[in-house]
Every structure is written in structure tokens, then in C-alpha cells.
Image (cartoon, rainbow, N blue to C red; front, side, top):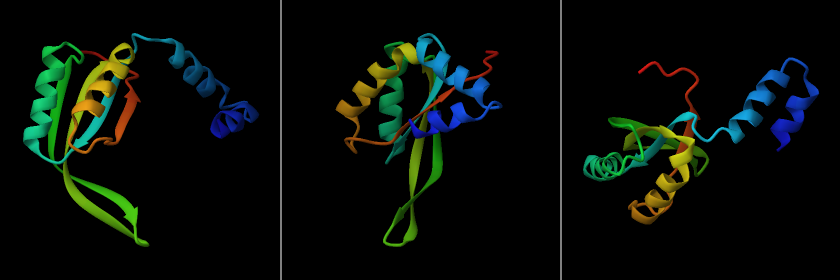
Length: 120
């Protein structure tokens, strides 16, 4: 909320704020969801399920991704497999529910990015 309040203070950022607020009202907008998995096998299992249930249009499995995170006053890192799901905001909560119920990490990081241009 702090970010939105700061955006309101800047005339140049009002367009961005209008986009953010209108995005919240648009259910059919295309999005990417990025979800880390510990193994390729687990990522394949989740992608196959989500595509077969038509919760996402496409799914990519990106191997050999390094995840950096803070801890013990230093940057830690580990190898992960990243799922990239192309879906809509309408399906986002159902995908999130499935992931929380079936992912081996319990509560993995799920990142959501709106797709500004989609030509496929």
C-alpha cells in the first residue's frame, strides 16, 4: 500500500497507478506464474497436471536455475527447476491452491507477472 500512496504523489506515475488498479479488475488478462521446484520430475508432474486440466495454456520447465536468497549475513544459493506457466488471472487462484496442496515444499514462492503483449 505504501508504494501506491507514493505513486499517487507523482504526476508521472499516475498512468502506472491507473494500470495497476485496472489490472486488479481484469480477470482475463494473461499472466506468467513462476514457481520453483526441487527436481525436474516434480516440475513435470505439476506442469502435466495443470496443462491437462487446462489451467494454463503453456508450461515451460527451466532447468539449472540458481536461486539466491539471504541468510546468515550472506547470500545463499541453490539449484532449482523453475516452472513458467502462461495462464490468466482467472485461473491464478486455482493454480495457487493446487500448488499449496501438492508441492513438496509446502509453500513455495509463486511469482506472478502480467503479460503486456501476447502475440501467440
